[in-house]
Length: 257
Image 1 (cartoon, rainbow, N blue to C red):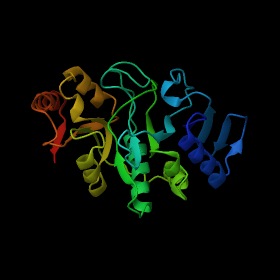
Image 2: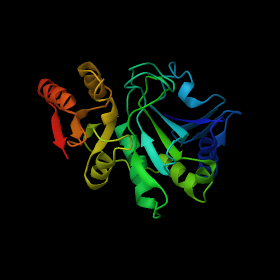
Image 3: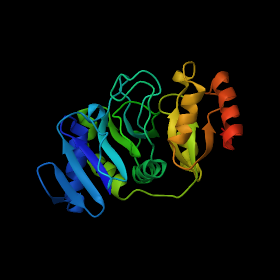
Image 4: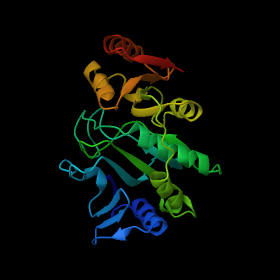
């Protein structure tokens, strides 16, 4: 079963959840739970990034979090990203702890958005791995940024809701993304043009502090990981060196772009 989490404290989350219920005739099981085929849509009162998700039922295969995207720079974006912290936990989760990524599901949603959004107002992009909550199931966030104006725009919440249910699943090879800024522009562009899925993403702004063990963990928490997709110009030398050693030890591929 795929669990979808909507937070009542998050306006974009509620917009997407409402569209999902309307579009797919989700059956109401209780005040907080709606079901459709292999999906459960669960409403929570807390903000999802701080919620306790450690003890999910064994029937849950993966989790999708519906969310707003906050940007101090006011970036207008439709994004997906893996969950966890590659540095100090400032927004939920634990310091230097990441959770299993969902490359196929995350990629399916982003492809659907890219293929069905035909305007220029929003950037359609990955984000680097960041923030909580902590959980032990494969998961990703899908987000509309950055204000109420954006998440109430005609058709946008519907587009995002459809991308979760009707996403373009591709059984491509899975890679850890490395380098570039928070929105991983080169990695995102490569993803759209090649037969590849991306799990965890290690941005350049943490390259001075990330350890070899943490890089190895991004591989372990990216299911069936085949290697690294590296923004070569956007990757610091110490990280290139560590990735080279890890790739050799674990028999992984490095794609440099």
